[in-house]
Image 1 (cartoon, rainbow, N blue to C red):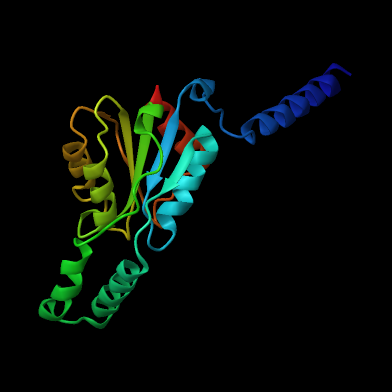
Image 2: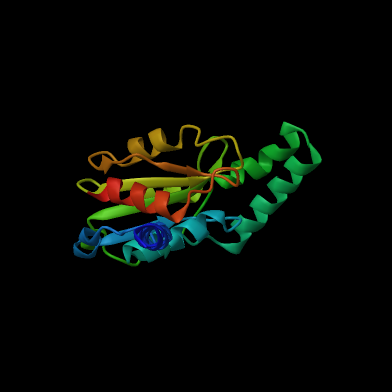
Length: 198
């Protein structure tokens, strides 16, 4: 009889343990007391997907950096040149236009936010020109800046260092680099966010 009770107890504990292990990762509720902004530019949609995940976890305000359609068309042409293996000379005119850019003016007040996540695809081993332009136009001194980037497998390059240079006076936290080969679980994403904002 005692043996049967012992076996039943073990089964119950096992079931409880399984339920505990499948719970969603715990969010840090101090997030609710902080004003969080997630700013990003996305070309293929990868950076946007993670910006939205961060927004959902933090309840932060999401802002997508907008560029003219002509800019996207120029990027499309440049990507096509890369795919065909065209010469640097042929691609030069498209590359030059990457840095000749106007972005839509930020329609919110930076002063309303304590923590700002900055998201970008990796282009030429660093952040994309639309993100560079946003950081040049907006003074983030005194803010907590949290970078995240998406890349095709070559790593973050010098993106985090460049964000730090463009946000003088801000506290820049450890960035997150995301690729198709290294997609973080929700648990890892929550842990990274909690570490960055607390």
